[in-house]
Amino acid sequence: MIILGIWDGHNSSATLVKDGKIVASVSEEKFTKRKMEVNFPINSIKYCLSVLDLKPKEITNIAISTTDWGSTLTRSFSSVKSDFWYERRRHMTDKPITWDLDLQILNQTGKIKSNKLFRKISKIALSKYLSKIGFNIKNTKLHLVDHHKAHAASTYFTSGMNKATCITMDALGDGYSSTINICEDNEIKTISRNPTKDSLGLFFQEVTSLAGMRILEDEGKIMALSDYANVEEDFKNPMDKFFTVSGLKIKSNYPLYKRYQLIKNLHWRNKPENYAFMAQSALEKFTTKLFENSIKETGIKDVVWAGGIASNIKMNMKIKNINDVNKYHVYPDMGDSGLSAGAALFISNKLFGTKTYKLKDVYLGPKFDDDEILKTLKKFKKKISYEERTDSSKYAGELISNNNIVFWFQDRIETGQRALGNRSILANATNPKIKEELNLKIKKRSWYQPFCPTILKEDANKFVHEKELDRFMTMGYYLKDESIEKAKSVMNIDKSIRPQFLNDENPKYEKLLKQIKKETGNGIVLNTSFNIHGSPIVLSPEDAIKTQLHTKNKNMFIGNYHIKIK
Ligand SMILES: [Fe+2]
Image (cartoon, rainbow, N blue to C red; front, side, top):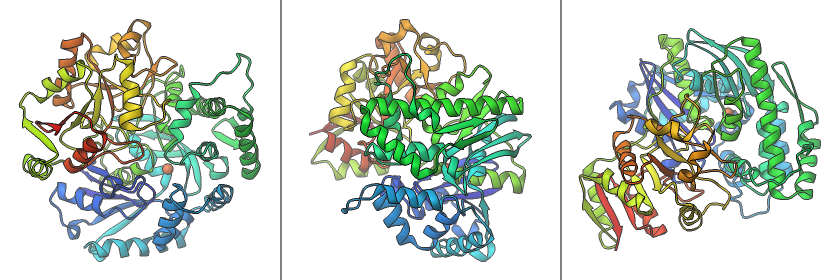
C-alpha cells in the first residue's frame, strides 16, 4: 500500500505514504538551496524512494495535485516557471518589476479552473518528467488530486480525528481560495467553496507585496510587524470593508484592481506597523467569522485546517480561542509544499481505504550516519576542531543555560518550515539580549520578528492556561503573567508565544531540555530554524558547517560531535 505524492509548484516536494502513514516527506529547496524551489522535485523523489529502498519502476501509484491553468502551463513550459515564478516573483530579476501587472496576471489567470484538457496536458508533461528519472509510466497510474482536497487530506488524515470540520484557505489553487468540508469516517465532503476572486490569501499577498516584501515568504513579517501598531481604541479599520463573510461564503466587496489601488493608498498614508495591523486584524476578523459560521453549519466543534493562510499563527490563535472550537489540528507543512503529503494520503484512502492517524512527529526527511558526518568534519579540519561527546544533550543544555548560542543538528530533518529540534538554533529563553544577538548577528532577520520556544510538556502549565498543547509550532498562546520573566527572549510584544510542546517524540532533544531545567528550573529553550534568514534550513553536515563558519557561532553539535571554529 505505497503511494508517492508529488507537488511540482512553488516549494516543490515529495512524500511517500505507506499503509496510510507518511514515512518520508521533504521539499526540494533543502537540496537545491533555492528557497521556494519551483523545479520538479527530483531529489526529493529519489530520497523518498530510498527510505524504503524502492526503485522508480516499483512505484505503481503516484498522486499529484493541481491542474489549473497556471500549473498546467508552468508544467508544460518549465522556463515560464523559472522566469515568472522564481525570478520575477521573488524579486530575483535584475530588471525593475511592475508588480501591478504581475499581480493582475496572477489574479486573472487564477480564476481559470481545472478541466479535462488541462488534466490531459498535465499528465503528458508529468509523464515526461517521470520517465526521465526512471519511472515506468505504462505501469504507473497518475492520480490527479484537486488542490484544496489535497490541503484538506493533509490535515484530516494526520489529525487522528474521526469527525471534524475542515477548512482550507490559501491564495488560490484549481480556481478556488477556500473550502469548507465535513470530514467523517475517513471521507472528505466539500460543502462550500469560495472562488479566487474572493481570496483572503491574495489580499494578504497584495499587502505583503506593496510593503516591498516577498510574497509567499514574508507574509509572516506583516503578522509580526502588526504587533507594533499604535492605534486608538475606537480605530476603524479601513480594510474591514474589503470582504463580507456570510454563512459559508466570503465575498470580496471590490474588483481586484480597485482593492489593490485602495491597499496601495493605505500603505502610502500609514506607518508600516499600522498598515500591517490593518491587514492582520482584517484577516483575523474574516477568518474567525468563517470558522464560527462553519462550526454552526456542521455542528462539529473539532476543527482541522491547512493551506498557506494557516501558517499565520496569530490568526490560528484567534481561531483556537473561538468559544465553539474544541479540539484542533493544523498540518505542520500547511502551505503548498504539504500538497504532496495531502495528495498521497487522499489517494491512499481512495485506493486502499487507509484511515486517519495521529501524526507522531515531523522528522521525515534525510539523515546522515556517523561515517558521513565524520567524513565531512575531516574535510573541514583546517577550519574547525571537533570532539566526540557521548553526553552531547547534557553538554549542550549546560552551554545554553550559560548564555551560549548552540547550533543543534541531529537525525532526520523536519518536514515543513519549522525546526523542531533536529535542525535548530537553540538559546537561553530567559535572556532578552540573546534575541538581538540572534536577529542581528546570526539569523540576520528584521528586528521585529519574534523567536519561539520549545517547552517540556511537563512544564506546560507553568507557561500557558490551555490543556490542548500544540507539538508543531502552529499555534499561539498567551503566557501566564507569572511566567513572563522566564520567557523574555521568546515572547511577542503582546505577551504571546508560539511554542512547541515536547514530550518523548525526540528523546535526545528532550534530554537537552531536561538539562536546562536542571540548571535553570524551567524546561524552556529558544528554538529557531537552523538557517540564515531567507535560506532554506540546513540539510547536510556540510551545510551546517558552512553556516557555522559564515556566522562564526562558537558551538555546534552534529550528532554526538561538538564542533568549534579554529
Ligand atoms: Fe494552496
